[in-house]
Length: 122
Image (tube, rainbow, N blue to C red):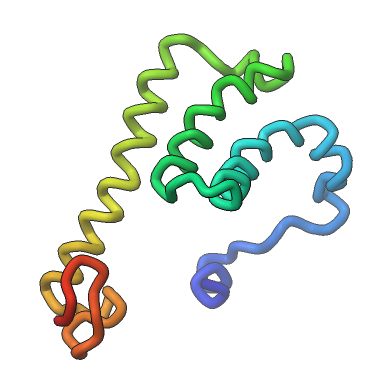
């Protein structure tokens, strides 16, 4: 990644232009709450698929807590966001499954005699 960015002339943001961490947390720290829902739910014993679902569903109420983040939400954009949130993980899992069934090295353990997540042995 570093070499690719260097080849295209991309550089990082200078330290002087980076925002202060505490200022960012003060202004938009509430947006970290859905991230904390996943480990909290897992620790409390809820299932692994349920925790991210609840975290994703909690994003809208959490964004509505502050006026600065509430202003960016439009009722028309909510269905689009839900559709995109469902489509992106599905495409990633589909690509991984295709790589796994094809015996590609992109899927860990496939084609080498190690176990896959969906069948006992490759």
